[in-house]
Image 1 (cartoon, rainbow, N blue to C red):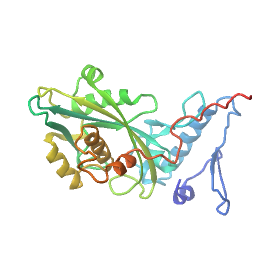
Image 2: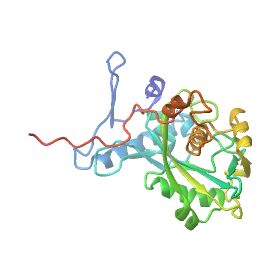
Image 3: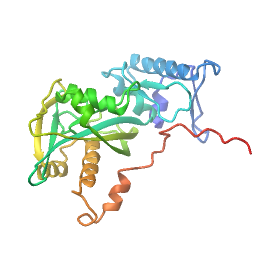
Image 4: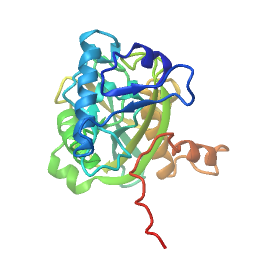
Length: 287
């Protein structure tokens, strides 16, 4: 958490905040359940605090975003899930989970790839008018990355869920840390660790992506030269660039032979995040 957020947050009795001179500085969530149901106590405390901050209009990030969609706190060791409203994750510096799918066609004669590229609607609070990956969304607390892709593909691109489940390929993940800024729809300078689960979907030329909800303005079917030109021109939403580069690497478009910084690129696509992304291992039994 950044010092400005800690100072502005209307802390409830569920939290203990260290004094400014103490090192390291800590925000501790107190277990009101006394250990009987720690996850439920955490979830209630997060929601109560976010509602208090929203009521006082403390943070732009909470002003006009839904608070009924929750993200899971990764790295928690309790049997039950800990989660908080999606709009508040960046305020707490908690790692987000996203799922991004690249839909493409391949010419059977030449092997040339053409990629489906959507343009985000101009009315969106975050990254309006920017280009995006074919299908993308935040992974809700109660779903898997694959389930996220299936329903987002239906809602955003009019893709048959049965087709997606049958043909989509999981291709790993990219991880990074960013600072919120223009286009993020909230406070600037928030530290945001993220994991994006990456999927590919090769489609026949007869399948056409088309907007179904109001979040996508249009879809374009572009060759790799057009995609690269838009990437270098800064037309894509920033984290989509990582997914595109990962696609280029996996499909042999970026290689050791044509990119002098190839190994550095691979390393930067898979940053080690400064927050837990999986539960700690159980203690080893005594010898």
